[in-house]
Amino acid sequence: MANKTVPTGLKVEDYLNQIEDSQRQADCRHIHDMMFEISGESPKIWGSKLSSGIVGFGEYHYKYDSGREGDALRLGFANRAQSISIYIMPGYQDFSDQLARLGKHKIGKACLYIKRLSDVDEDVLREIMVEGLRQMDEKYPR
Image 1: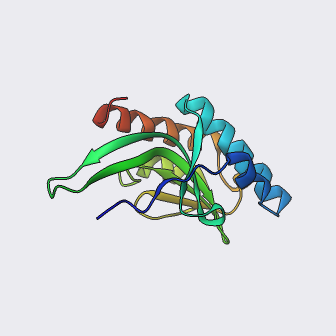
Image 2: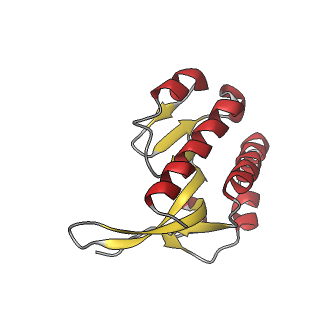
């Protein structure tokens, strides 16, 4: 089974420009800059189309015991209808201390949902991103 989330070749600037809400666009641009600084990687749009894509920084190759393998982003974010989704690939299960200090958010397995950047402590968000990327680099060296 092939990975559905793959680099699309779409331009990150086009993705950011199509965000209609000016505050949401500014938040996404700030998150973009944070992730670029933290990762040192140029971003790519991952997914299948512009509106539902993920801005991903870095990539790694995984191979499961089942034989399934593919490539995925190391760190990323996406503008969604209800929130901004922030992806760290180790997932958020080991981040209870940071999440308790973060501010207003919801979480999924590898996804953090925030309504706006002003709802969270940016220093804590940065700490989470740095640690998530460190864990990825440990498990999947660049």
